[in-house]
Image 1 (cartoon, rainbow, N blue to C red):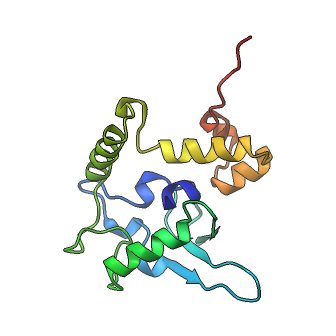
Image 2: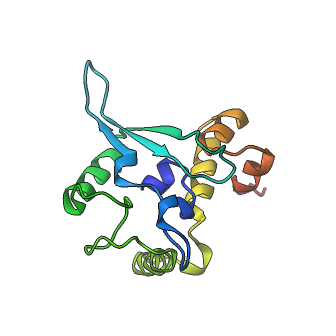
Length: 166
């Protein structure tokens, strides 16, 4: 859910064999902003190591509460289970980081269980779906490019709106 709402790249939340876990989002990079003065709660997510990012310039994303499948509610539930120990945000119970391979296999298993063809979805599908959803909701190209942290027109390849046939 966080990958979708934050337009996250899989490398920002999982590790690959031989890659330093220092580049994934850490528990300390996530702040829950409580509701106040009529404003719903939100998440502040700091991305310190992102593709195409200038060194030393973290990116701070604000992810707002939603009425349906709320990312704030789900991340709070996860954090209750995860605990407050330092390190990567997404970890196994023994606090080792989640690998891309494990994430991918679990995504496929969940899709199969839900009746979907897992060969049609990959780890990158969260960014694709986020960009497509933003486009169908009327966000401008500039807004989508900013939300997904794209520095070029490459974001257009992520928008997958089916063509209607007559």
